[in-house]
Length: 334
Ligand SMILES: [Zn+2]
Image 1 (cartoon, rainbow, N blue to C red):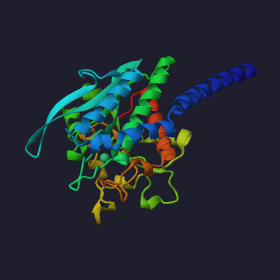
Image 2 (image 1 turned 180 degrees about the vertical axis):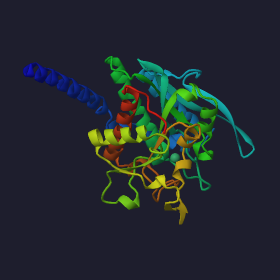
Image 3 (image 1 turned 60 degrees about the vertical axis):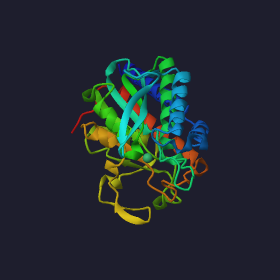
């Protein structure tokens, strides 16, 4: 009897560790090399700083469409060639622009959605004619999203696809006031009340001045605000697979930051696209490396990115999405 119990335990243990190996195998398809290759394209001068509505922004959109097409990931409901078009009113001017949205449908709970997002736009060309390449802001978020999508697609091919649906959402108009994500949450492609989380990535390739010499960190903002489940899952997968120092100081909106020459209240929880999801009562995590001297300057270039670190941070988000998508029960709101 005792022997039988032992054997059963042993088999269960092997089952678990095989599962863990498999997840790690998909995570390992996320590499510094691929992130770098894509980022050098995405933040090249050809994209002209990706200002909302500009030719450079359309080129960025094209790059994203081509990636999903060649990876065999389909467009989200209601999109055409992955595009969710919109007309924005920016300073009295009508601007035609678009979000990019792709989906991997869940196998068991296809009607529950996890949105992983990054903003595809940046601030364009400055008054002196210099291109703001926006490698960190938010080139890193976009290439991270592509690598995560590709890793999940490999799992699908092995019959290990996610149980819940994953939406890969590249939003426009962030730098103009979070406009693309606002449009998405007001015109959702899938029901908002079945959108269980938004993981938003905005600047994850650099190290800020508070972490010189100890770069293995990432700011997580908002993870504990709407759902303790979400916060616990995020901590657990980090302990198990990644081991970054997760820094929560900016959950306090009043924590001061030095930015563009002065100290200001950070208010980061309200400053990127996740905020539009949070306003709809959707639990969010905002992944962020903090600001640096090249923030919103033509010097935010791909040569300054720490690629092994970008890989590690991308893996954290992948593992978090994996757990959220595959766990037995949907995460709960507080
Ligand atoms: Zn940004």
